[in-house]
Image 1: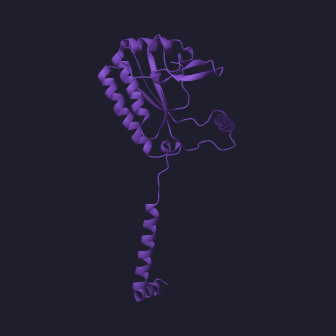
Image 2 (image 1 turned 180 degrees about the vertical axis):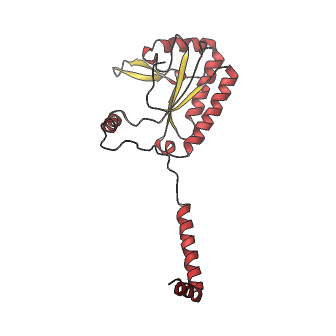
Image 3 (image 1 turned 135 degrees about the vertical axis):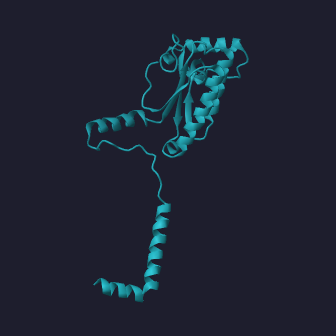
Length: 211
């Protein structure tokens, strides 16, 4: 059998060589189309009770696992230069491609009564550039009058505060998220070095605990 096969191969070596080359080229082309998935792997089966509860949770409250939290603890957060730099850092990060939204102490909103429409409007806590310590003191007074932020993004007893950063789903599920995290880490380290604080970064949190 093998003698016949080897004879056939030798008599038609040009044809066999062409076929092998074509198969190799086809496999190489298919390999070039292989992509690495950055989606989170599903561990539990669809019928698992915990997984079903998780899916119901997402239906009510939306997608999770796309939040990156960065923060530091400093009772002098509302010092003019430090607070202004934290504000500018918040704006810089929010403008990074792939960032959907961001919330930090300087980017929060307050409720203002709209008498003409008989409703409350959301108004940014900061509406103009911060010029001096007097501006920061005024912002601090307004912020501390908003108790629903206490323990979520700020702890007035310890000075612990966080910046919650959400990613677009497209960039979260791609290798672009690694570049975004690296870019944010560099910016955080620059801020931490300048103000001698220790910034902690936690990626892909499902929920935000009390500070």
